Length: 98
Image (cartoon, rainbow, N blue to C red):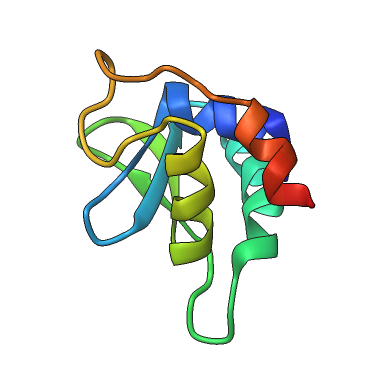
C-alpha cells in the first residue's frame, strides 16, 4: 500500500461507518491519481466511483472496502470525525506487509 495514500485519507478523506472510504479534492487530476491507487482494493462487486460534489465544489472518489478500512484503522485513522483523534502508527504498516 502506498504510504502517501494513508496520508491523503487522513488529511482529505474519511471513513464512514459503512466502511466506505471517501477522498475529496478540487483537482480532478489528483482524484484520478488517487483512484488508480485505490483500485487495488476493488472487487467484482465493489468498484471505485468518481463524482463531482456540486454542494462542496470538489471531486470525490469512494470505495467500500473492509480490507482497506482494517489497514487504515490499524494505522490510527478512525471512522467518522477524525481531526482531533489521529495519531498515525506507521510501524503497523510494516507488519501488514509481512
